[in-house]
Each structure stands twice: as structure tokens, then as C-alpha cells.
Image 1 (cartoon, rainbow, N blue to C red):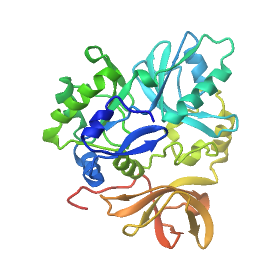
Image 2: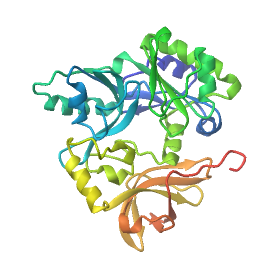
Image 3: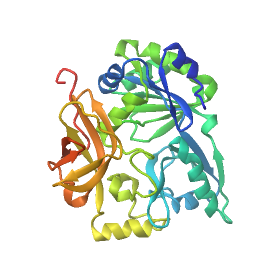
Length: 360
């Protein structure tokens, strides 16, 4: 099992641990509900060191990578980033990643841990005479995340640095910490990720907890982040997307550029756009109260099989079970009633609108 540089901090906090893609990560630090509300109303500190990171660099890197992913690369400004898919020639999703432009000739791809090698192999397969180098940086960088409405205040106290206004996925290098600060979130909240050398991660973890005490900071595990991710309607690769999924089915249209020119899988993406729709789409489902809903359960609409569940969790804010599911286009309209097992649910627009604690 792989472990984060801050693993001993998990043990000290008596976190409940779980296996995630070969990594031993915290599922919870004692109370998933308390961690959920920290993310919703205060600040949560999460360790994302298990995520994969691949460096793509070289004289031909901008042109080469531009033809390999679904979003803009060549015209992406330095210090900016975007979200993109890596597709097969038929337009199915092999992987997704955050694409961060570091300088004129280098990019850092941040992805789910199991996708680092998938992306590396896909890129390497197409390097012929290109001046491009690929290097796995997963072990070279730890990643700590501050997420929630008070994340910026905690960051300011912990680092002694007031970050400028940053657009989503904008990033800056902090010389004093030898770290990269990224405006990002794992669950659709206000958030900052700090990519830092592993030997500095423990000190930063402790500083963040100390600095965030007055803001009600909580260390948060996978379970609370998953609830907030589902509320935000964000699909996760391996859970809500796989090699059978088409980009437009996920509703993540910000991962697609329709002006960048050719890339692998682009013909299918463009054909779907010209046709106007896909046959299924990712939707939100809302249940009454707490229900036992699991991945791959079938959804029935008007008595007919219409799709399946991909993610489900109990939302402490909404006080009900919610889920993400792929449903046939003709059954995917908000307000439509469906049956999952023996439980009725209604289709809702994404993202879910979770109330504050006083309303819950």
C-alpha cells in the first residue's frame, strides 16, 4: 500500500483508513458529518497526495499535447489551467486531467492515481519524432487541499501570504515554500491546493490546522469529500466515467474546445455536437430520507429500464440520499420520477442546492 508523506498525522488523529487505488487514505477523521459541515461552512483540510501528476515538457510539447487532449493547450497562458479529457479514436474517455501550463514548454497533468500510467502510455504511443519528454512526478509532489468558504483566510494565516484573486485552475509558484498554489477544488467548493515537496508536507499540515482553528477547520477524509462532490454534480473517473463514456454524456462541456482544431477523438465529439445530443446523460437523483442506494443499481422510468446509478451518498445538508446516474435522454428531464430498487426518486438539475446548517 502506498502512503502519503503525512500518513503519521492520520494515525495520530485516529483516522479511519481505506484502500483507494492502491493508496491507504483516510475515509474519515471521526465524524463524516462534522467534516461535511466544515467543507460547507468553514474550512476542511484534505490530503490529495495520492493523485497522479505527469510532467509533459519539450520544444514540441504545446503542439503535441494540443493534439492529444480535448481542451485548449497551445493558447493556454502560463500560470493558467483547464480540465480536459484524453479520448480514444472513437471519442470514449480514457482519462481526465487538470492541465496546468507551467511555462512555455512544460505542462503538469493532475489526475486520478490510476490514470497516470494510462495517460503516459497514451501520450508515449504517439510520440514519434516529437521533442517531448514525459516524467511521472507523482512521488515528487505532495498535495494538501484547503477547501470551503474560509479556505482563503486559513491559507493566509498558514502561509503568511495573501493570495491574489485567482481564476479556477490558475496557479502561482511560491519560491519560499518551493510550492505551487493552485485555485482548485475536489468537491466544487472554494478551494486551494498546495503542491509541495514531500518533506515539507507535515509542517504545512500542522500549520494549516493551527491557523484554521478559529475558522472551525477540520481534517477531512474521502467520505465527506465524496458527498460534496456528488452535490456539486462532478463525475469522478472510475466511478462515474470509464472507457465506455462519451464526453457529452458527462455534461462537463468545459472540458471541450470546439475551436482548437484536430485532436484524437475530435471527430466523434464534433459529430455529436452537430447531431445535437447523446443518447444518455448524467443526472442528479433525489430520494426521500435516507435510502440504501448503491452503484450500478438499475433505474426504471415508466416501468422500463432507463439507466443506472454511478454514485450515491447521504447529504447532511439536504437530509436525504442523493445520487448521480446515467439515464436515457428521453427519461432525463428534471422532475421526472424514477424507481431505484423499491425506492422512488426524482430527477433534479445539477448541481444539488445544499442548504446551510441552520436550514437543514
